[in-house]
Length: 352
Image (cartoon, rainbow, N blue to C red; front, side):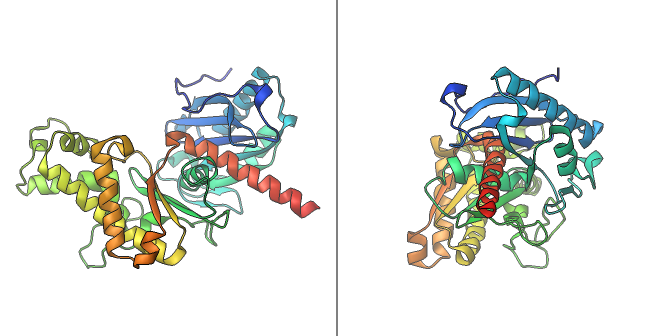
C-alpha cells in the first residue's frame, strides 16, 4: 500500500451512489505532494488521496505509485479502472504537451526530459490528458469554481512565481510551444534596469513584480535601503506572508508594498484583457493577502481593479470582473479531471 499524506480536500466527498458517470481521475503533481481525485461528470469529488512526490526517486516511480493509489481508491468505492473514462495529469514547469513530455521542471531536477504521459498510461491502462499545473488550476476554476458561469476566463496564480491559464470559448489555450497561458511573463516594465523574473530570468516580467518572491525581494531591498517598518525587527527572512502579517498590524510600509504589487498586477491584467476580452479574470495561488474574507485581501483586490480600470477602455472595464479564486489548492486536480472530461467528450463527438 502506498503511504498517504495527511492532506485533505476542501471539497465535500460525494457518496458513490450520488455520483453521475462518466467518471474521470484528476492528478495534480506538486513539489512535495501529489493530489489524486475521483471526479464525476458534474465536477464533484467522490474519492481523494494525497501521496508524497518523493522527487529524487524520479517520475517513473511516482507514476507507479499514482497508478497503485488510483486502483486502491477505486476499490474502496467499489469501482475498477474500467469504470473510468480518462485521466487528467497536471505537472509543473516546461512541457511538450503533444509529445507528453516533461522538459525541465525547475523544482523537479530528477524529472527532466521524461515521457510522463506514456509512462502513466502504461502504469494505469487508461488514456491520459496532459496539462501545465497552472493551466489545470485555471480550468478547475473555469469548470466548477469562480468562472463556472463564463465561457472565457483568464486566471493568474500568484505564488513563488506567477502562473496562469487562458480559456477562450470553453477551450484551454495551450499554444504551439505548450507555453500558452504563461501570463507571468507579460512585460510590465520595459526599462533597461527592470527587475528579473524568478523563472527564466526575463527582465521586466509581471512575475518579477507580482509574485511572492518578488514581494519579499522588494521588501528586503527597501528595508536595507533604510525604509521604516516593523519588518526590520524580524529575526527570520522577510517573506510575502510576513509582509501580509505586518500589513494586518497597520504597517504603512507593508500596506504600500501590497498596493504597489496590485498596481503592477493591474497593468498585466489590462494587457491581457485588451487582447482576450474574457469577461473574467481570476486571482489564485497562495499569495492572496488573506483573500476576500480579509480587509488586506479586499484592499489588494480593490487596488488591482483600480489599476486595471485606469488603463482600460471604460466600457471594457465595466464588462470585466476581477475576483479571487474559490477552489484553493483543489483547483489543480479538479482542473486536470475537467480537462480529461473535455477531451473524452471531444473524442466521442469526433467518433460520431
